[in-house]
Length: 178
Image 1 (cartoon, one colour):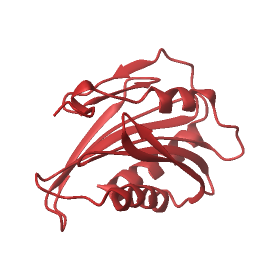
Image 2 (cartoon, rainbow, N blue to C red):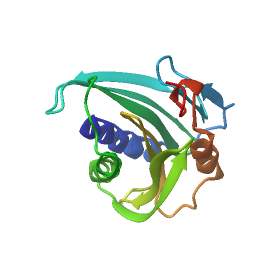
Image 3 (tube, rainbow, N blue to C red):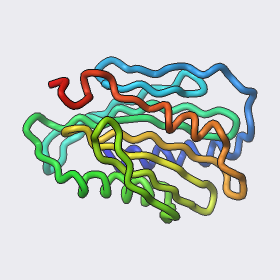
């Protein structure tokens, strides 16, 4: 999942940054069936679903990608096979590391965060072509990621913060909802 996600991000970031800025669009609420979350995105995203085998068993990656005003926005999650036990910190760090590797970026900052009692990290990165800001959360056995990319040399667009802070877990994903 991780390598596939990061290859898509890299290709899209190069294409979007080359395309320049687009006209602003109304934001839409993404709340995909089975995702157990919602997030605001500047336009309706394209969806990609892929199932692969791994040493942990089959896993399915769900990605939603859109771009607006020179920024790429990505929201996604992974469903592992039932019974897979993840190392919380290891899974969060692996998502960060694989994302940065996939977009050929170096981490520039990181801080621990939480959402509804679930652990996560927010990190920033920089490559030769783009700046990145992302959040990774681990909710039970499901990692979520929201990430944005924009051109090097540009200040972080205010819409990036709007996007990242709009991510919310659905009631079914919150503690005590089992």
